[in-house]
Image 1 (spheres, rainbow, N blue to C red):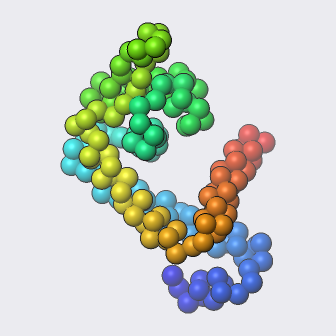
Image 2: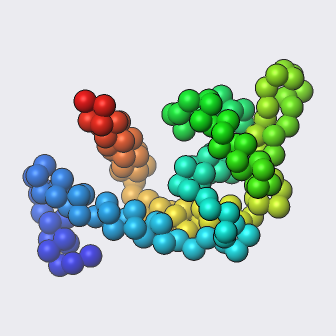
Length: 160
């Protein structure tokens, strides 16, 4: 962080100053996240960010149906079904019949890939933990709410 960035943070920021700071920091943040090392077991799999989002939900929430994944990813079930099919062919996820409703499939991370996926997610998780631990619960809630609101605003502006 540069000295001017620190001064900006310490002083009262206007909305325009905050927008400028965020527009400058977001590309760097995304770039750094993209440079997190991919574990050897996942290299060469040609995984995209959309795959990582799906795998993160499975890693943190456990096995889910295609519909549940679609709800969490905010995409159509057919999109998730295609992604799951792709990941299943590579052996990264499994699809099992639901014992309660045989029409539904339960998607889970394949046992051989649980540790590499956890390793891949750990870089971002460690950075977030380091930053968020220093905050109060209210401050953490504000950051999460702000990120969700920003995502929603991007969606609204993209469809306008």
